[in-house]
Image 1 (cartoon, rainbow, N blue to C red):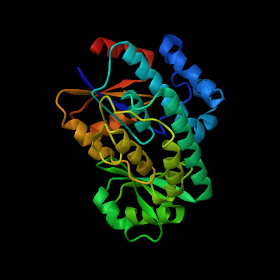
Image 2: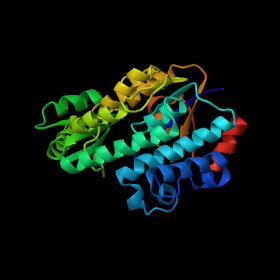
Image 3: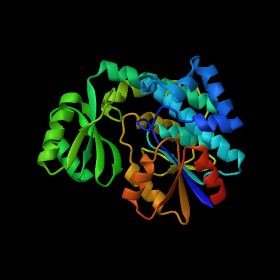
Length: 306
């Protein structure tokens, strides 16, 4: 079978994630133990036991999700399953790159840990906000945002009727009011620590770019659909550049899923906690076949399927 791996990003984390995988598979135990050693803190305990407030702190969430997703990838690889295509939502793109062999687990963990630190710091120094806008097209959202005072941009283009906007808090508030007046069904303020995927992240992106230069990247074993370009990339230099741009650019998930949908006879595997991407995939293309892979039971079902 031909598989596309889908990796969720920040917001999908939950206390207990990865615990049964850790108990069942040696590959997962190695990854979590390595993560604890590299980070110098008990990430395993944070994942398995919480508390939720500690897990949802950006500097913990990003390495925690990456570790869980990488561990599942390792289990699948040991069972002879590999992706023909990989993509991840925001943070999830790093798991996709790991699955494609662009960098080692240790390097990937250090990269996402630094990314989380820089994004959290940017959130503290700039009064930013994000909001999910439901029931109005992206084009109409862009028109409304052009009339708003301050910085506010589309940040996550999740499905044809759901776009997340990001920017200065007052501008996001004004945009929300105008979008409701323009026909949006709902505008939901998100509990985030900053204006991610917006120009407000530029200082973090500059520092992150310098940090990335210190890590070796290799050519991807399969195409990794970039959040920025919405097409598969394999060149390490291009991938590095796009990861920096990702911090200030929208996540083009609708366009990315459109690319996946054009591939023949492909089965999508959502690797990581929850099934958010499964829901978004169906909104983007109801014909896509998406299976979840976050528990031991999911894994064994997938092994029978393959």
